[in-house]
Length: 439
Image 1 (cartoon, helix red, strand yellow):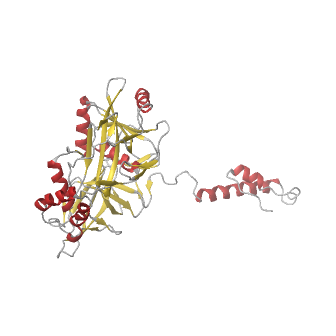
Image 2: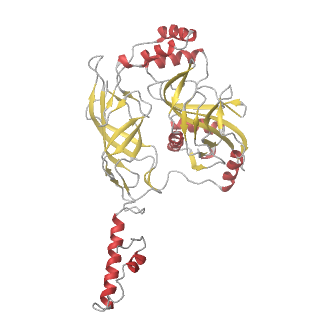
Image 3: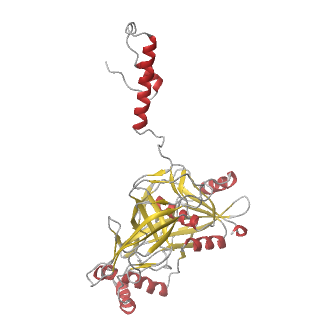
């Protein structure tokens, strides 16, 4: 009769004993040897079958993403084959609780492919191969990875890491004409504006210093030892109490002017107005522009030429009976994609009098039209954008602590004010900025 295996080696040895009387021919010493040997085999077998304890805590597995930021301009017009490329890691890369690649680590490589478009029907192509990782105060290590994303880029990244440019005929101008048709008389006015402001679509691939990329490991990466986290991962009990006091009465979501529920709140920032402005500037984010004629023209131009608009206005949303106090965004080379967030100052302060702000961060990934209203489509995974905002602020160097907090009865899914869906774990990221004296 087969006995059921157990995860406890001692219990397994007890269950493996021979029936009564079977010991007579072998003696107790041999029986003990058999029991110990069986236990040893069991332990070795379970160790290879993947229990939770990591066998290599200093190793990142294949498929792990590393987030980096270019430190130079890359262009299919001016760059050349084998040109050296340098980037910096902009998120602590962890394995469980251990930071293996801290913010600020250097990644180097070269341009492995660069093909400018020869005709309007040709795609520009670019491939950057990163091969070396240098962690401060650690030996350099070789890295085997490929680019899998260029954040907020109009270009497409192919499976092998090649960045493929757009075609002029597929630029946003054609799509914008279709959108204008859906807007009736308002669309007619925007068409007139667009005809005066549009220029030739540039299909070259050109990324400025500060462009964010994601690398995916093709081979495991092992470092000699972990590094300390870039910032503290806990906040003081007094600040935690103030945050919970805020969340006990704060709404779950923002709303539109017509009181339709919008984005859920997922971000809390501790700091003054000046500290927040400095932190986002250092992080590479721009303050959103105000709605008006000038911004409308800039929006049309960006939409039709498939270019970025780093100070594009955001739609107004409401919390505590008023529109946002601050709005920030980060774009690249297309109006269709941008990271952005809105902040409201609350009446709650920390025990030492610092202001506490609450807000909502979302990632625009395209355009959508509902009932003649043009709006951005958002990435439904709000936790990814929450992490992006926190990581960029941390990489800017003006953060002292970041931690996730829960609130009573959190929401986990829903729809935006314009009908887009979203999901989240319901937590909020608390970001504590450095005081002015520490900057």
